[in-house]
Length: 211
Image 1 (cartoon, rainbow, N blue to C red):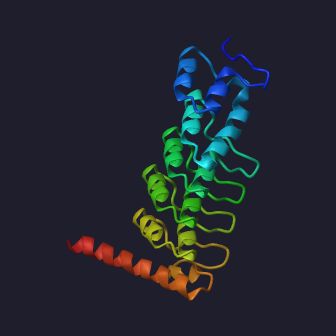
Image 2 (cartoon, rainbow, N blue to C red):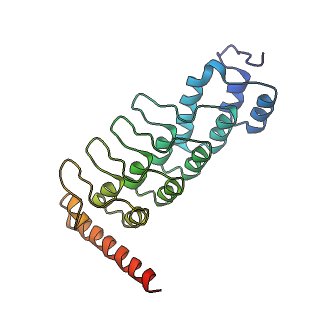
Image 3 (cartoon, rainbow, N blue to C red):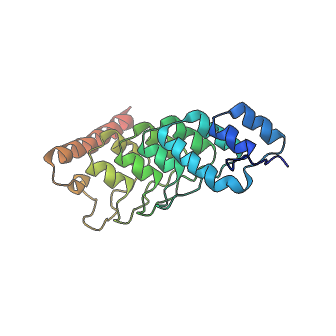
C-alpha cells in the first residue's frame, strides 16, 4: 500500500533512504512502508554509501530495513567496503545493525583480515569486541595475524595477540611459530617492526603479570 513507485522506478521509501532522510524513513516505517522488491537496489546504494562514508544515508537505509549482509559479485559486503576505505563510523553502524562480521569474500578475506591488512586499529578493536573470529584464513592460508605481521602493523599485531590469535597456523608458504616475522616479504624494515611488536607484547604481558 505504501510502496508507491515513482517515474524513476523508486518507492517513497527508497527516495527517502537515498537522500539520507532518516526521520522521514522512520515515519514511513511506522506507516508500514518497506523496501519490498527494491532490496537489491537498496543494497547497491548501501554499498556505495558505506564505501564513501555517507553516514546519514547508511543510517536511513538501515532504518528502512536494508539487508546489511548483501554481497556484490566479489562477495564483498558493505562492511568490507567501509573497512577498506577507513569509514570507522559506518563500520560501527553496520556492526550495531547486525552485519555478519565472519563473512569471507571471494578470496577468503574476512572483515578482520581486511582491517588488519589496512592497519585500521580502531576497526580491529571494534571487530574483536563484537566477537570476530580471529583465526579465519583466506585462500592463501593467511590469517589476520599473518597479514598484520607481513605489513608490519605493530598495534594491530598486539591487539590480535591479546585476543588469542594463534601463532602456529600455516599458510601456503611458511609456518608462523617461533618467530612470526618470517612471514615478512623479505623487507628488513618489516621484519624488524614485527620482531619489535612480539617483544613489546611479551614485555607487556610480563609487566601485567608482575603488577
